[in-house]
Structures are given as structure tokens and as C-alpha cells.
Image 1 (cartoon, rainbow, N blue to C red):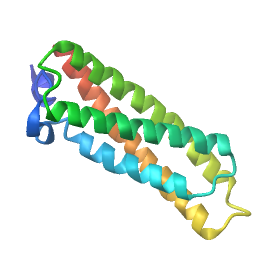
Image 2: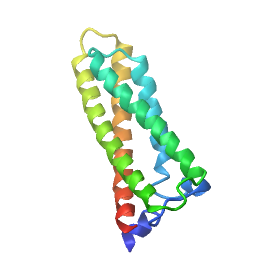
Image 3: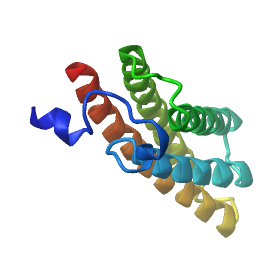
Length: 153
């Protein structure tokens, strides 16, 4: 009973209660940090274009999907059905895995660019790595509590 109570119950919130229940409150921070990763990677120079492409795909995909889910939850499109709890858990597990892979690749690209790149580009990539790992942590925490909610539904 305690895990379900800690995760805000076994149903998804609707309306503005999305911003007052945990783990759904994390949507706001996922939105902010995902946007920061997107902006920083888009404005920086990465030595491997394929890595930058993957990080951009992950950040844009998760930013758009998170925004879509927030809007759908705000208007109550889920109607309290349990299939939406499954969708929420599946999305956050996938997003956590995607962001973990993007964070590791961005960190690797940043480590290899210490020499030969400008000070500004190197520090933009360091910031992108830090925010990417913060976004990864947020998605992992949200995924864990979404799985707890899914199990209790």
C-alpha cells in the first residue's frame, strides 16, 4: 500500500493535479532539462556528427513526447483507463534508456574534444552532458514510480 501512496495512487491525474502529484510533477523538470540539452547540443560543435544526431533525436523526441503527454493529461484524455498507465510506464522506461545512451555518447564525444576545439564549444558540451545526465536521472525516477503505479493498477 505504501508504494502506491508514494507514487500518487494507481491512476493518472488529470487537470492541474498533474503538477501536484509525484511522479507526474517530474514532467516539468524533464521538459526544462530536455529543452536545455536540445539547445546546448544544437548550438555546440561535436566531433562526431552521428553522436550529435542521436543526442538531438533523443532530446527532441523526448521533449515532444513529454509535452504531448502533459497536454493529454491536462485535458484528461486518458479517462482514467489503465492502458494509459501502461503507456506512461513504457514511455518513461524507453525515454530513460534513450537518454542514458545519449548521455554516455555525449560524454564520450566531449572527452575526445579536449584538444583542437574552442573553449566555448568544449564548455557547451560539458553543460550538455551534465543536463543530459540530470534528464536521465529524472526519467529513471519517473520510470520507477510509473512502474510502481502500473503494478498497483
